[in-house]
Length: 385
Image 1 (cartoon, helix red, strand yellow):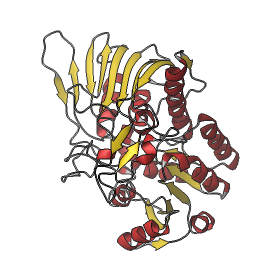
Image 2 (cartoon, rainbow, N blue to C red):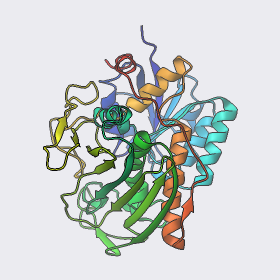
Image 3 (spheres, one colour):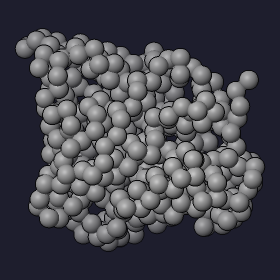
Image 4 (tube, rainbow, N blue to C red):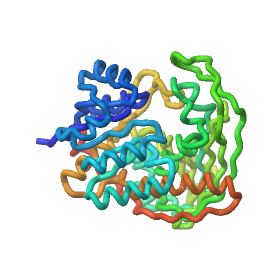
């Protein structure tokens, strides 16, 4: 019988509902207690999901809890993850690992010293869409990848988040921190680690209006750039032109396109788990469609409008698989895929994009990581209900 890990949740905000829903899909974890610096938020969460609300300090000290699920705002990820590790808990955090690279590096060192697992979202690269693309690339169906493009462009998080202020702060704000991890992790899964980046940035407006929730209509200040154009060179030689923006009303470009020696590939939305991979290997030919809706982590499981305006109303959403895969790895003494080294490298790329844009200089990355292993059906079936 599968051993179930007891999870303590810190951060009872917008994304928490997704992880509670994940308990329906995965067989090895249960959220038993929750905490938040906002006591009322914790109490509301506890009431909805019939668990116990406690203080942050109490949940960190609780011997019944093996793993802390860190769903705080980005600027709090480092502190909560550090406290979790120092209290002897494994920790799985929402993205990014930290806001500052030096803090992320410290977390990795603490986890290694304490022999604890540190995991980090996004886990969407484990879904059917990105894994199908990875499978085809590993078979070299379009040869060596030489170039590519990736784009996230949207009006901004204020349209679907009731408390969007942190995403527009000078520290920890902007599209690179918010959506960059999805695109960069997907690309590293497909291409391997990156070498360097050049970047430029700008913003559209210094004021935003909250579009949802009790603060709807309130104007908030924009303290950070909201559009970045970057060129990332990977260690395998591939060059990717990356756009990350909170300033675009709509567009018709594909999320990720890869151009190889023998053809081109369209990779589905890295913010989702499903979608089709499209291939073209001959000029003027029809694109071959590799559907993922019959893959375990590509099947449609959401059929109502997402609360996030930048997500499809009907989609495959298996957020939480990274946590489940980490628990499986802890129990079987294996290296997990959403691991600290991968997350630190993604944070290093994020740091590089920001610094290159500020200094107008090329930024070489200090870190590297292993390309995650392909996620096999056998491994998926071991954690799925």
